[in-house]
Length: 206
Image (cartoon, rainbow, N blue to C red; front, side, top):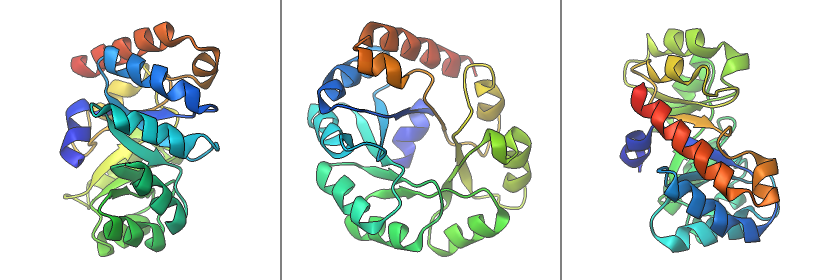
């Protein structure tokens, strides 16, 4: 799963307010060349939306903003193949291992990275990226942790994407600029597809 995320190098962080939006959004992402989605557990539509996207069979679908072991179960039952957390939770990481899904816990300090390594996790989410020191902070953390890979998320967009992707320790980057919540809610999937295609082109230039 890590390898598949690394192939695309970009993870759309999605907030869905209605399950009915999941199918059209998935179609837009795939058509735009980015068959990946991190569906955040910020709305009641998250679990069923994951199920809808997974059922397509052509996407890498994960759950985001997962903060409890029970949410890991909900995500796994819906078919999510990876789980992203804003911080580091032993309970979440251990439940992910039990359920056979990839855990990407948040870590922005050396102590948190070391705690993740103790739990057997060597790829972490660096969140919130820009307000936690940005590119300079990722480079600084990568120096003593040669085998750790980072997925920076938070405040990243077209203007600073290349800066993050140029860091060897960055496995992929999370972002929401190609999947704006208001466009999804308005049903403007054509614009989402256009933004997605632009984002994919930017990644290829990196």
